[in-house]
Length: 325
Image 1 (cartoon, rainbow, N blue to C red):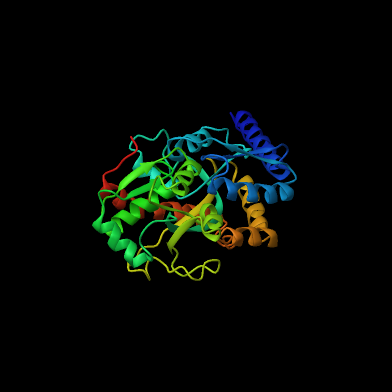
Image 2 (cartoon, rainbow, N blue to C red):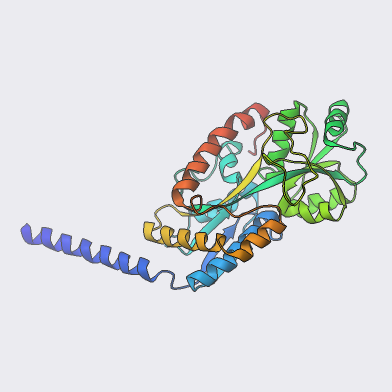
């Protein structure tokens, strides 16, 4: 019996030693970063910038793979089911929190299906309209929308997309249900807004900055707590009369549940280095956002954020009564 116990203990020690050695050598091959939205969209843009810098630090290429569909839940589900070896990770936005309520029968348990690497950035939203939309400023836009609620159209990139979440929050703040027009991605939604087929959209600065700067859309407000340096002339929605209206689309990196803590820590350290890179700061600023500080690019900070955001959005979604399934 004593010999058996010693052998069992020896075997366990060998396994632990092998695991530690593997974590120290990580990564030994390329890593897949799943983005649960279409290529070219705002989340994809953030992912590719970060993947490039993290690849240089880790010494292995991070390959961005777009797995869109079902409001980001298909891509998230793919990662939830992946081998927890550190070679598959997920970069997703606030939809990780909202999908927990939007989808009443998810294939995974959001809070228990993933491990955490860290927060990447919090992107402000902008309230924009087709270039020839009648109201001249945010206050008059609110009045116009309330008076024409049955005809004003609000575009979004599909249920669970950032534009859908912001639009839902906007309608809640206005206490006005608008005619929503869902698209299969941000690109088609923006195309129809530019073409005048729809009236309004609420979307991330990573997707709207160039359009606002080029005056191809009419911009009314930003959803950040303070005005943005890139758009100093645009008021916040709070300044415009919507008390408490603040929507920031945060992004985080996750790994499958059971990924070795040492691996998650290595990825977190690499993420922190990437976010501290001057080039990332410049590129993010051009998109109207900024990198998360080092204290937020940690597993603990992302876990706390996800938990609090699920609790924040649950009553909003339930009050709207609009579900994805």
